[in-house]
Amino acid sequence: MPKQENKIEGRNAVLEAFRSGRTIDKLFVLDGCQDGPIRSITREAGRRDTIISYVSKERLNQMSETGKHQGVIAISAAYEYAEVDDLWRRAEEKGEPPFLILLDGMEDPHNLGAVLRTANLCGAHGLIIPKHRAVGLTPVVAKTSAGAINYTPVAKVTNLTNTIRDLKERGMWFVCADMEGTLMYDLDLTGPIGLVIGSEGEGVSQLVRQNCDMTAAIPMRGDIDSLNASVAAGVLAYEIVRQRMGKR
Image 1 (cartoon, rainbow, N blue to C red):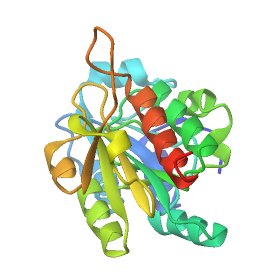
Image 2 (cartoon, one colour):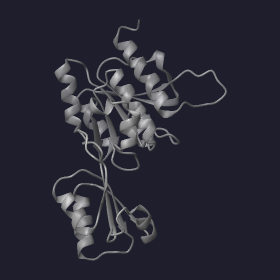
Image 3 (spheres, rainbow, N blue to C red):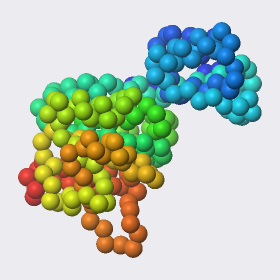
Image 4 (cartoon, one colour):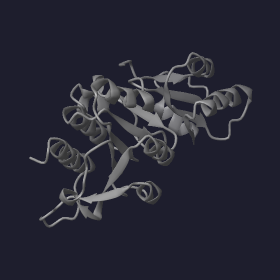
């Protein structure tokens, strides 16, 4: 559900935003400031597992649009997040085996927007992203998605590994992109499946990879050794589509 992303500045405004249930992606707090109002704000942020960054006064001054930040600035999400159960129900309502795309630490909003667009076009039932060390649903993501953000739900989770484990208990299989993996054409990617794509620089983290059932390699014949993360997501997603259509 779209809404305006903005910076919420000032102690009372930020505290009320949390208490009203507004989705806050990140909280920036003046480093070393621990008075009562700030503790109340960080306590509310902790309850919602909001990312808190402690920064210098100079950084807050640069970020501020009002000049009255009072040592705290919150960044609200541009779009509402779904729950993982919402993605699961979406597959059930369509009578299809779940097909989810999980992004492990993707930080480039253009890449997230591109993956959202691919997810919509290939029939994925939604995306799952981590709360920490990853880009959220920003206006840049929305623009790059070419409208797909309005149709493809995105869930934000605290721990991607635990989410994978929970979904495996429901019968899902997980495949992650890995240059050292099995050639994607040699894998059975049908059925309820989660496709895991790593960050732009580091790829899929070791713990997440260890919890996947398969690793898939994309055949490459050029002189460089890797694809852009969103391109890799597109290639593997459409191999899943091809196999679901009967490997034609």
